Every structure is written in C-alpha cells, then in structure tokens.
Amino acid sequence: MEEPGTVYFTGTAGAGKTSFARAFAEWLQHAGYDATLVNLDPGLEGSDFEPDVDIREWVRLADIQDEYGLGPNGAQVAAADMIALKIFDVKQAVQELRSDYVLIDTPGQIELFAFREASRAIVEALSGDRSMIAFLYDPALARTAGGFVALMMLGATVEFRFRLPMVNVLTKADALTPEQLAKEMQWAGEPGALSDAVADETPTPDAQLSSELFRALESMGSLTGLVATSAKEGTGLEAFYQSCQRVFGGGEDVEPSHDPTNE
View 1 (tube, rainbow, N blue to C red):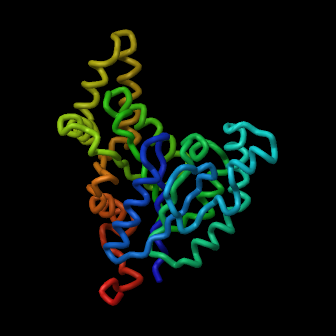
View 2 (spheres, rainbow, N blue to C red; view 1 turned 60 degrees about the horizontal axis):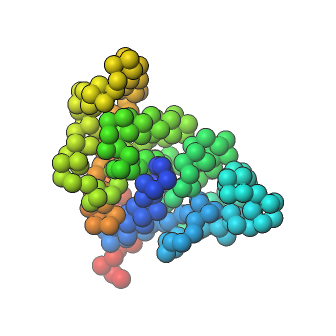
View 3 (tube, rainbow, N blue to C red; view 1 turned 90 degrees about the vertical axis):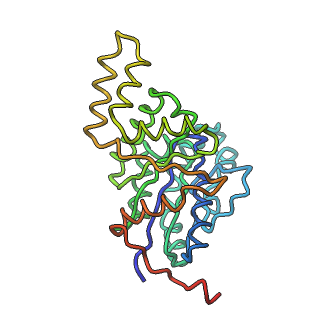
C-alpha cells in the first residue's frame, strides 16, 4: 500500500479548520478513499467533530488546568509539550488504520502550532514523503488588502518553520458576495492588483515599507494562488483535492485502498 497523503490544516482561530477537514474527509470517502481524521487540539469543545484519532485520549486541556492550576493560556503551552511526548502513540494509532489520507486538524491557536518547538517534533514524527500543509484564509480577515498580506506573512512563516509544501485555501467562500470573492481571488492570482490595493489602503509615510514588504513576500513565492472552498456548501473540495494531488503525485490520482462499488 502506498504511503498515505498527510495534510495538516492550520490557520487563524475561526478560519474553519475543523469544519473544512471534516468536509474534505467526507468528500474523500464519497470518492472511494479511506481518510483518517486526527484531532491535535487538546482543548476542542462544543463540537460534534468525531475524529478517528483524538489527542484528547492522552492529553486534555481541562485536566492540565486542574492538575497544575494553570489558566487557559498556560495550559495550552503545557499541552503542546505534552502532545510531543505522546506523539508516537498517536502515530501508532494512525498507522493501524491504514488509510489513503491522514487529515490532521491542528490547534485552534495557530501560534501553538507554528512557533512551539514541540510542534516541529510532532510534524517530523507524523510526516512522510507525501505530506503538506493546507493554510486556511479566513475570508473576513482577507477582505482588506492589508489583512490579505498579513495572512500571506503568517502562511510564509508556517511554511518556513515546517519546510513542507503548502496550499492556500480560502474557506467560507459562501459568506462572501460574488464581488468580494472575485476581489480576493484576484489578489491571490495577480500580484499587481494586490500591490495596488495595498498602496491605496496605506498612508503615504508607510507606503514604502508596505511596498518593500510586499516585494519580499512575492520573492518568497507566497503568492501561489488560492483555492476557494465552502465546507457548508461542499464547494471547492474537488479543486482542493487536485491541488493535493499536484503536491503528492504530480496530479495523478492515488489508487483507492478499497472499491466503494463492492460495499
């Protein structure tokens, strides 16, 4: 059996990581592929999300708060390090399921995933040769050119930290008007349009700094397009799958581990 494709879903709090990961898992299953959903957020609450492998079986945020007398922020930091200590238990549970795809929902607070040294150990333990990051753009934050560039900067930081291929995904496209969606997609595909929009939003004294920052992001390859999706409406999932396949196998579909016509 070929090594599974592993996708890490990350982005700012509220970007829709859990909803999108679940929607993509359902799309894969309908297409005939086995997908394992992994939850790496020890503080996940108030969700009907039922992952196949759940870090809360080993590390729970509420338990850490009670045991060590920590507040929510301190407990999140402690939990990140504890997850790293349990990651090989998680890896074994994932391997036992022998799926075509492993979809990993990272903690809601992106800084815990992006900047903790423990996260690098987690990614190294779970990643194989066919691994990538899906960086999710919250459309509300991306509505202004400045917000769009800020998300580009955060995505570039995540890519630099983990050195994995990355696909940029605009979530909740259904929440945008057609005009707003067209504008954000244009910014993702036309550097000149985004540069002009940044200049229009930026006060004159800061224009040079903004221009230099934009050029640096462009030279790093941070402008690599955007896949518009909606977990609510189920749109854009096939386009995202195709983006994953370009990363994993040059665009070739993997052979499903089972034939859904026989089920």
